[in-house]
Each structure stands twice: as C-alpha cells, then as structure tokens.
Length: 341
Ligand SMILES: NC(=O)c1ccc[n+]([C@@H]2O[C@H](COP(=O)([O-])OP(=O)(O)OC[C@H]3O[C@@H](n4cnc5c(N)ncnc54)[C@H](O)[C@@H]3O)[C@@H](O)[C@H]2O)c1
Image 1 (cartoon, rainbow, N blue to C red):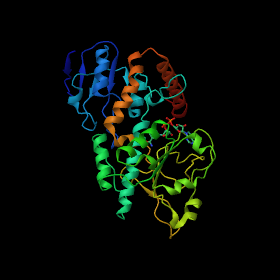
Image 2: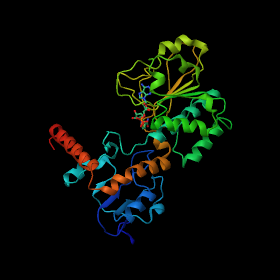
Image 3: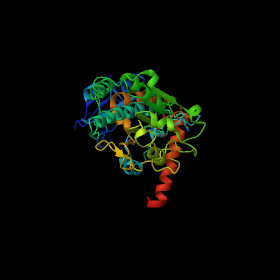
Image 4: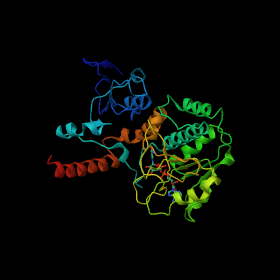
C-alpha cells in the first residue's frame, strides 16, 4: 500500500483502489471519537478499500496512528453539517447510528462505554459530595485506565464501600456501568443488577433510596410506572442513602420517563443538576448527559468501529446499506417538502 499526501496536506490517503471511504475532521466541541480507527482503517485497506483521513488535532487518534490509511469518498462517515453540500452534489448520506440488523438492533452502538462513563461520572459526583462540593467540568480521558485511575483517586483510592444499583444491567449500557463499578473496587455484593425480572413488580422502588448511586440504563419502548418519584424521595427525609442518579437512558423529555425528578440534560461543563427537595432533605444530584461515550473516545471509537466493520466490508452490497439509503431518501424528501430544496 502506498500512502501519499495531498497538495494541501489537509488529509492523507491511500492510493486509489475500489470503494473509497473518507473520515472527516471533527468540529463539535469535546467530541474526540471517530467512526474509523487506525485498526479498522487498516483492515479496510487490506480488504482493498481506499481510505482518506482528514487531518484532525481533536480526534483521540493522532494522525500518525492512521499513517497507513487513506480515503477518497463514497461513504461520508460523519457530519450532518455537510448534508446540504452532499445532497446538492448527488451524494448519499448514511446515518451510521441507524444501521440495523434484521431484528432491528443497531449494528454499531456506543452503549457499553456510555454506561461505563456514566457510572464513572456518578462515582466522581459522590466523591465531590463527600467533600461538600459540586462535581466540576468533565473532560474526555485518554483511555479507560486513566478514567478508572482518576475515579479511584477522587474516591481516595477505591470505590469500596459504595453501594450501586444498575437498572437495565443486562443491556449494553448496563454492562458497561457494572464493569466500571467493578474496576473501581466496588464489592460485587454492593452492585445490584436489575433488569426486566426485577422491575416486573412495577415501581416506584424504595430499594433505589438505599443505594449511594442509581444508574438507569433501560431501553424504554413502552409506558412503565416510574422507578422513583420526587415525593418518595422527599418522604424518606434524612433516612435516604441515595445521593446521585445517573440517567444514562436520558429519556428526559419522554412523557414516560421513569425518573421524573429532573427535566434537563446536563453537560460536560456542568454535569449535575440538583433535585429540588425540601430544605431538610440531603442533597441529590442527577447526571443526564446524552453523549457520555465522548468521555472515553478511544475505547468507544474502537468498539463502534469494530462493530461497524462487517457492514463496511460489504459496502455497497448488503441490506443495511439499502435500508440506510431508503431512510436517507425519505428524510431528503421530508426536508425538501419543508424547505423547498
Ligand atoms: N447517555 C448516553 O450517552 C447514551 C449513549 C448510548 C445509549 N444511550 C441510551 O441508553 C439506553 C440503553 O441503551 P442500550 O444500548 O444499553 O440498550 P440495550 O437494548 O442493549 O439494553 C437495554 C436493557 O434494558 C432492559 N430493560 C428494558 N426495559 C426495562 C425495564 N422496564 N426494567 C428493567 N430493565 C429494562 C432490557 O432488558 C435490556 O437489558 C437507550 O435509551 C440508549 O438510547 C444513552
């Protein structure tokens, strides 16, 4: 494989082969993830694809890590920002987060690392509360080990002694949350893992009040009774252990939100929102960040890209692409009717 620089040196790419892939540079603040990693780019190159990677100082992977891949363009791997140009030029945009398998499940999703990062943020919020402080701005970590070490250090060395409840524990996000709690040293018996069987009796669940941190990771697709309510929390008064809720699912504005105790999405600069309770109630914070995997860009990108790889290797053949193209055309038609495109 021969690699060459373009005249502008704004990107680097492989020599021309068959299908071409182009990884755009990322402009969104805090976003360091990539749908193509050096590892998956190499696999695609070896399979005969041409790969182009725009230079990007923000991406978690250094340009040098890709120095064996490069692209031209048929699939735009990112960037709703460029959709108008692409459509005007006759291109097709595939939304990679809507590629689904025959059962309707996403072929690539960031779930595991959302749960992992959400649980980390929850543990950090507990550490801050213990010092009488509010959790400050969160920044992406270089890698998982750095995140685990950072959380342990904030907790004084270990998460031992924390009691956690994860609902949706059998899903992608839930498994990630459980994994983080294990890695920071929370005792296995202190990680309560609930899924459909445990919530079948119907909420609200007072068990939630008896843990330090509750992480919600369910996939909500139907109306269910709330898991917890402001009234139940207030009624517990000083007898409550719960101090942090992490709503990974973030069904914040869904009328069936099973955690109707807050109503905004929090952010990396301000990760927590207080639950308004009576004056004599202990503090309770909610974390409801809807792009948590951004905190762990390296591992989140690797997993997403690995899951995406079988579909990319099939491109342009395969049901996922024809379905995605159909979705694209539907959305373009909808946009055209609204905006007169
Ligand atoms: N905040 C973020 O950054 C972020 C990132 C990725 C995904 N998400 C969201 O997290 C949610 C979960 O995603 P996932 O990929 O883990 O889904 P998933 O389908 O892999 O897992 C969901 C789990 O929830 C369980 N569940 C569903 N209803 C339940 C109920 N009433 N009681 C108990 N368990 C229940 C399911 O059995 C399943 O095990 C989705 O809403 C997704 O959009 C958020």
